[in-house]
Image (tube, rainbow, N blue to C red; front, side, top):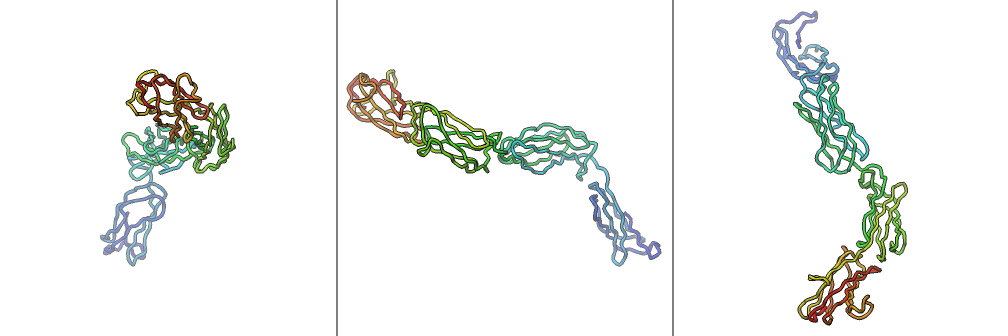
Length: 373
């Protein structure tokens, strides 16, 4: 750019040595190299470099005491491709919804290299959010696009757009829960607790859900929810919980959770009591303990907080309705228990009977040397 210092009639003032300032303003074109230059023989020059192409920017040459001069400068085209610019720079997408990712091949200054046809790879890594649809796309006029679909919600995953020879770019994408479509029911008789979770189609918990969820049951067994056969509970953060009271575990029970507009969920459960004589090494079980040491029994599969009764009776008294030794124990939250009792038993074969509610399990126990149980 050349700034000539003139008189009123347009003659060059060859004696002028003013300092001339070159500035750029307006438009979307950008240049580098603006600043000041000292006139020599009335002429000052400045070399500008085109950067970002766009609409015309106005170059102004000014000096103290003189009327400024202006010129319009438009940066066009692009230089060599050096990098990828990925947009959007960040995004949030609901599970099941889509997000278009755009990779633009540019030069150093951010101009789109419209002749570029590179194959761009879109990949996801990190975070707990997951998306589907990653892969490759060929650029057309310097632009490659790929549509991703939100899957599992979680923390942001990083989308990377890359191609050979160019600097890659990244963008964090966060997947959120989609529209509530179904319920997922978990829990067991043993824990006395049922939990219904409101989920979208991909199994994400819809934490904004406050649906009223109705718990019920059917089958040969029985149970109550706070003395009722059904119970409605409003979800909090997408989760509703119901507590079983005194379930009768004499048969299997199918539990159900239902809410208006959502697919219901069921689960079946039954308690299968199991137990063993700790230290048993033969069949039938034996209790070859030193004198005055009780036999110890343990088991699992029980309903938490509901008493388990262990009966030990002579073989000819089965089932253990009378005689022998009886002890009760309350299972822990996991449905497991351990118990024993000291009582005199003669050598011989005994039945061990474990009962909870309507469920009974039994085996035989061989007592030798008159040990104590």
